[in-house]
Amino acid sequence: MKKLLFVAMTILLGIAGCAQNSVVDTLTAQKEALKLTTKLNKLQLSYEKEKANYSKLNEEVDKLNAEANAATAAFNTSNASNTVKDAKETIKQLKAAKKANKKLEKSQKKLQCYEKKIAKTKEKLDNLNKRVLFVNQ
Image 1 (spheres, rainbow, N blue to C red):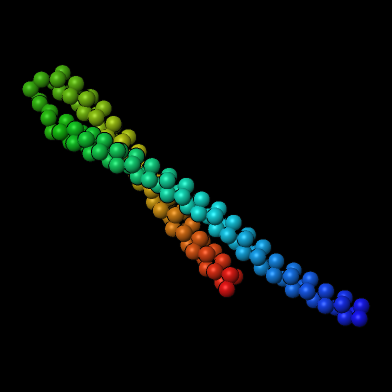
Image 2 (image 1 turned 60 degrees about the horizontal axis):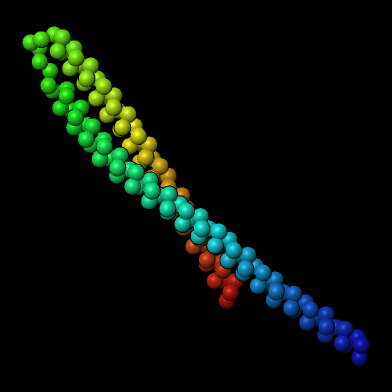
Protein backbone atom coordinates (compact mmCIF):
# COMPACT_ATOMS: atom_id res chain seq x y z
CA MET A 1 0.00 0.00 0.00
CA LYS A 2 2.82 2.38 0.84
CA LYS A 3 4.54 1.56 -2.45
CA LEU A 4 1.37 2.31 -4.39
CA LEU A 5 0.92 5.60 -2.56
CA PHE A 6 4.56 6.49 -3.20
CA VAL A 7 4.25 5.72 -6.94
CA ALA A 8 1.02 7.72 -7.20
CA MET A 9 2.61 10.74 -5.45
CA THR A 10 5.67 10.54 -7.69
CA ILE A 11 3.52 10.50 -10.82
CA LEU A 12 1.43 13.44 -9.59
CA LEU A 13 4.53 15.46 -8.76
CA GLY A 14 5.95 14.73 -12.21
CA ILE A 15 2.76 15.82 -13.94
CA ALA A 16 2.50 18.95 -11.81
CA GLY A 17 6.13 19.80 -12.55
CA CYS A 18 5.57 19.51 -16.30
CA ALA A 19 2.42 21.63 -16.09
CA GLN A 20 4.23 24.33 -14.13
CA ASN A 21 7.12 24.18 -16.59
CA SER A 22 4.83 25.02 -19.51
CA VAL A 23 3.32 27.89 -17.51
CA VAL A 24 6.81 29.21 -16.76
CA ASP A 25 7.74 28.91 -20.45
CA THR A 26 4.62 30.83 -21.41
CA LEU A 27 5.34 33.55 -18.87
CA THR A 28 8.96 33.95 -20.01
CA ALA A 29 7.80 34.17 -23.63
CA GLN A 30 5.25 36.81 -22.65
CA LYS A 31 7.97 38.70 -20.79
CA GLU A 32 10.13 38.68 -23.93
CA ALA A 33 7.14 39.86 -25.96
CA LEU A 34 6.63 42.77 -23.56
CA LYS A 35 10.30 43.72 -23.84
CA LEU A 36 10.07 43.67 -27.62
CA THR A 37 6.87 45.71 -27.53
CA THR A 38 8.59 48.30 -25.34
CA LYS A 39 11.55 48.40 -27.71
CA LEU A 40 9.19 48.77 -30.68
CA ASN A 41 7.35 51.66 -29.01
CA LYS A 42 10.63 53.45 -28.27
CA LEU A 43 11.78 52.96 -31.86
CA GLN A 44 8.50 54.29 -33.22
CA LEU A 45 8.71 57.32 -30.94
CA SER A 46 12.28 58.03 -32.08
CA TYR A 47 11.17 57.56 -35.68
CA GLU A 48 8.38 60.11 -35.30
CA LYS A 49 10.75 62.63 -33.71
CA GLU A 50 13.25 62.18 -36.52
CA LYS A 51 10.45 62.46 -39.07
CA ALA A 52 9.44 65.84 -37.62
CA ASN A 53 13.08 66.93 -37.67
CA TYR A 54 13.36 65.77 -41.28
CA SER A 55 10.38 67.83 -42.40
CA LYS A 56 11.79 70.91 -40.66
CA LEU A 57 15.18 70.36 -42.29
CA ASN A 58 13.53 69.80 -45.66
CA GLU A 59 11.80 73.18 -45.50
CA GLU A 60 15.05 74.86 -44.47
CA VAL A 61 16.97 73.17 -47.29
CA ASP A 62 14.38 74.17 -49.87
CA LYS A 63 14.66 77.79 -48.74
CA LEU A 64 18.48 77.77 -48.76
CA ASN A 65 18.64 76.06 -52.15
CA ALA A 66 16.28 78.64 -53.64
CA GLU A 67 18.39 81.48 -52.22
CA ALA A 68 21.61 79.90 -53.50
CA ASN A 69 20.13 79.39 -56.97
CA ALA A 70 18.98 83.01 -57.09
CA ALA A 71 22.35 84.28 -55.88
CA THR A 72 24.32 82.46 -58.58
CA ALA A 73 22.33 84.10 -61.37
CA ALA A 74 22.63 87.68 -60.10
CA PHE A 75 26.20 88.61 -61.09
CA ASN A 76 26.88 91.97 -62.73
CA THR A 77 30.17 92.53 -64.55
CA SER A 78 30.03 96.34 -64.68
CA ASN A 79 31.78 96.80 -61.31
CA ALA A 80 34.56 94.39 -60.35
CA SER A 81 34.53 95.09 -56.60
CA ASN A 82 30.78 94.50 -56.39
CA THR A 83 31.19 91.29 -58.37
CA VAL A 84 33.79 90.05 -55.87
CA LYS A 85 31.50 90.87 -52.96
CA ASP A 86 28.61 89.14 -54.70
CA ALA A 87 30.80 86.11 -55.37
CA LYS A 88 31.82 85.91 -51.71
CA GLU A 89 28.18 86.14 -50.62
CA THR A 90 27.26 83.46 -53.13
CA ILE A 91 30.01 81.21 -51.77
CA LYS A 92 28.64 81.65 -48.24
CA GLN A 93 25.13 80.82 -49.38
CA LEU A 94 26.31 77.78 -51.32
CA LYS A 95 28.26 76.51 -48.30
CA ALA A 96 25.21 76.97 -46.08
CA ALA A 97 23.07 75.09 -48.62
CA LYS A 98 25.65 72.31 -48.83
CA LYS A 99 25.76 71.98 -45.03
CA ALA A 100 21.97 71.88 -44.80
CA ASN A 101 21.80 69.26 -47.57
CA LYS A 102 24.25 67.08 -45.63
CA LYS A 103 22.10 67.38 -42.51
CA LEU A 104 19.03 66.44 -44.54
CA GLU A 105 20.80 63.40 -46.00
CA LYS A 106 21.92 62.30 -42.53
CA SER A 107 18.37 62.64 -41.22
CA GLN A 108 17.06 60.62 -44.16
CA LYS A 109 19.56 57.84 -43.41
CA LYS A 110 18.44 57.82 -39.78
CA LEU A 111 14.83 57.44 -40.89
CA GLN A 112 15.75 54.50 -43.10
CA CYS A 113 17.69 52.90 -40.24
CA TYR A 114 14.71 53.32 -37.89
CA GLU A 115 12.40 51.80 -40.51
CA LYS A 116 14.65 48.74 -40.80
CA LYS A 117 14.89 48.36 -37.01
CA ILE A 118 11.12 48.71 -36.63
CA ALA A 119 10.47 46.10 -39.32
CA LYS A 120 12.96 43.69 -37.74
CA THR A 121 11.48 44.18 -34.26
CA LYS A 122 7.93 43.68 -35.58
CA GLU A 123 9.02 40.44 -37.24
CA LYS A 124 10.61 39.18 -34.00
CA LEU A 125 7.50 40.16 -32.05
CA ASP A 126 5.20 38.36 -34.50
CA ASN A 127 7.31 35.19 -34.31
CA LEU A 128 7.32 35.36 -30.52
CA ASN A 129 3.55 35.89 -30.37
CA LYS A 130 3.06 32.86 -32.61
CA ARG A 131 5.24 30.83 -30.26
CA VAL A 132 3.26 32.03 -27.23
CA LEU A 133 -0.03 31.11 -28.91
CA PHE A 134 1.33 27.68 -29.84
CA VAL A 135 2.45 27.05 -26.24
CA ASN A 136 -0.95 28.13 -24.88
CA GLN A 137 -2.77 25.61 -27.06
